Image (cartoon, rainbow, N blue to C red; front, side, top):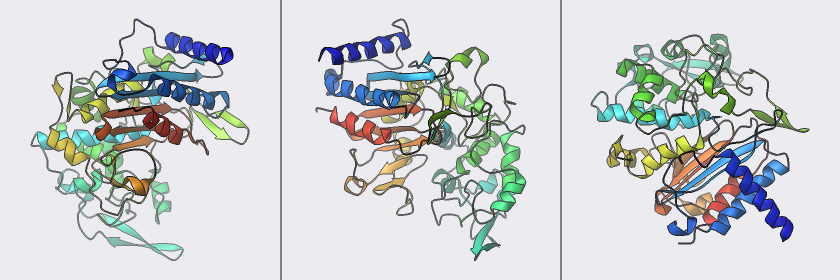
Length: 423
């Protein structure tokens, strides 16, 4: 018992050093018991998350939990950079990859509320290059190209039913030749609208509206934001989302004075964790510091902290407002967090997909703790988040590992967060 107490005390000391007392918490705080959660249960969560560091399955992580609008848990584990023996801090900055998609989806809905567009409009109203787009059809070991059955709409893009994947479908050779494959944009020297206009000439993987195909849909939406607003995606998000929400550490490319807070990317291997290449491409460290700072990827480009992202999700849970700043209406939040794809979403049983988020529709079919109406997603570097309106719960979990291998931390995180809820 004494050894266990000393270990927990050491963990608390590490956390305190990682998040100085003088630092302002990202959201109002409360003791867990004040919002119906168990301190002991959250301590158990810390023990389990620390075990992934101790067992060399993760280099480091940051986890955040809010309930009933109050921050009850915000802890850092392991190292930002193992080779430099740099301890992870609560405000360290992660590549959040596909967590960018929710913010850009929000931007489109904000433009709808501005009266600048309707999500039922054809994409070609904004990007004419998509007026006569084509679809690749697999034919044995080859493929054919046919006209699209109908125009792609913005709603198709928001729900990932546009038919555009990440360039690895039947016509992958054409996509490779065009240099447009995968979600990584940070090293590109052309504005994103130029990339997306080139993408329009390549055949999609499915007909519009017929299937859930995860890919460039939100990058295309980012280009729409630029065309409609007359700003770069970075400028629009800063003015309309990041600035109003106080997300001061969320950027497409990191300011040089924050470079020491950028977490290092690792990869799981048979020999344990390995540092990913530097600068690397997709599975490497990336060009977020020294890159051309030209291409703003709406699908996977942002860097952020658990605290910043927690503020965004708390705004969504609040029905579109935070700290007196209203970004969107409650009706728009409801629209975004409702299943729009019926049975087309086949990634997780018991879930559908809304406008930027997966949405839980059947707890029994999914088979893990949660609630109907819960919405969330994650990122390529093994990050995850969810919002449970029924429990008034927000969870953000950031790590930096790709590929992650068979690590089961996401499941343990979910089980222990719900186990800590007492009423």
